[in-house]
Image (cartoon, rainbow, N blue to C red; front, side, top):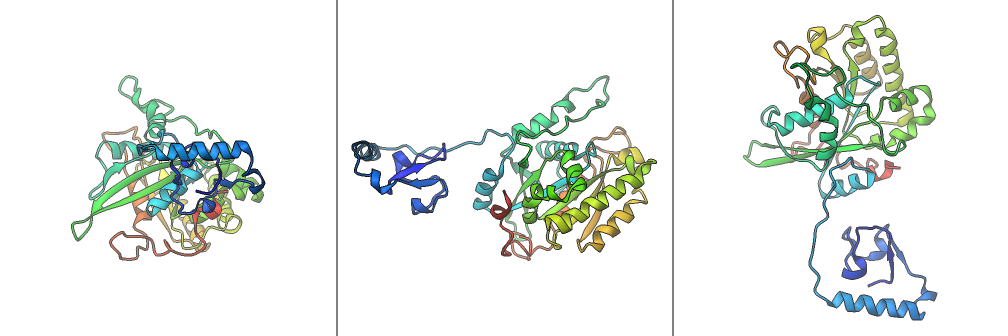
Length: 342
C-alpha cells in the first residue's frame, strides 16, 4: 500500500488498504496525498506503518455509508453519476415563480404512488430535504391551503447549487424494469436575478452545461397581469444568458412550465408564445407545459397536474433507442459533470 494520507473523512484506507472510491492505485485518487519520501524513514513514520500493517491483518467487517437525506452537493452528484447514468435537470425561474412547490409536488406524487403510468417511485437519497420543503403543506387551516406554500430556498453555501435526488422506474416493452435517476436543482430566485443583472454571474450556472434539460418556471398569474411584459423580457434576457454566457448546449431541451395555472383557468397565457419563440430562435428545442403543483380549486383542477409531464418531456427527449433510454448525447465528450461542478 502506498504511504500517505486521505483527506476524505469517510475513507478507511488507513486501516483497510482499500480506496473508498475504488481506485486500484491510491495515487489516482484525488483525495489521497502520497507521503514525502524524506519522511518515510523517520521513527514516527516507521511506527505508523507497522501499526497500519498490524491493523490490516485484523479481520475487517465491511460496512456501508448512508446519506443523511439532505440536499446533495457536487461531490455527492459525482458519486451518483459514477454508479449509473443520471439525468441532471435544472429547475430555474424568478423568485416565487413556484420552483420549490414544483419539486414538493413531484415528491408527494411519487411518495403517494400517484405518478402517471407507467412510472413508479423507486427511491431517493434526499428524502429529508424533500420533507423539509413539504412541511408547510401538511398544516392546513380550515381545510384550505396556507398562503405560503413553501419557504423560500436558502442555500447553505450561496455559491454552490443544491441538488435533490429522485429515482423512478417503469416496465419497458420487453417486460424489463428500467430505472431512471434524476438530480434536480433547487436554486433561489436570486440566482436568476443575478445572472440577468450581470454576465459575470454565469460561472455559478456552468454545471448546467452537463444538464439533460431545463425547466423554466414562469408564474401564470404574473403572465396575465399588467407586469407580464416585464417578466417576459426578464426571461428572454435570462435565456440569452444561459445560451451565450453560460454556454448551455443547443441540444438541451427547454420546458416552459406555466405555474399556478389553476388560478388562470388552466389556459396558456398568449404572451407565453413570445417567450417560446424567443428560446426556440436561440436554437433550443422548447415545449410548454401548463401545471398546477397545489391547486386552490381542487374540485376543478387536481393538484400535481402537469408536474411530472414537465420532467417526462426531458426524460423522453431524443433517446438512443436502447433499453435504458439514454439521451443521444449521454456519452458525448465534453459534457462531464465533473468538468463544470466548480
